[in-house]
Amino acid sequence: TSPIVHPHPDRLEISLGRRKVTLFLNNLPISSYPVAIGRSGWETPIGKFKVMDMKEKPTWINPLTDAVVRGGDPKNPLGDYWIGFWTDGRN
Image (cartoon, rainbow, N blue to C red):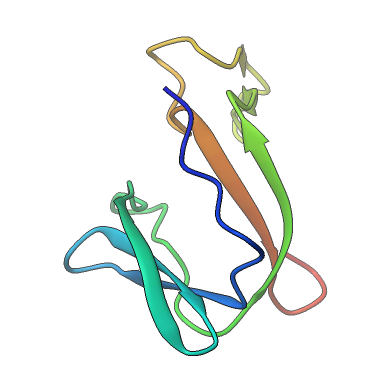
């Protein structure tokens, strides 16, 4: 199923402990969704970031082996959706 599309939320907040992302518009929460977070050794970074890209059924390339796992494959650690964000200009 596809996520519900909202008019241009102005920010997203991810609660790692609750594994939930909340969309905000004009500082009011408009919707929340469950999310996966990074496991040990692949932790989800903490901080404020700018969303640069969003993909449905993303392909994952293992950074250690270069093995490719296509989008939609149940073995894909990214799941069905991926959000790419700007961190420090290097990552």
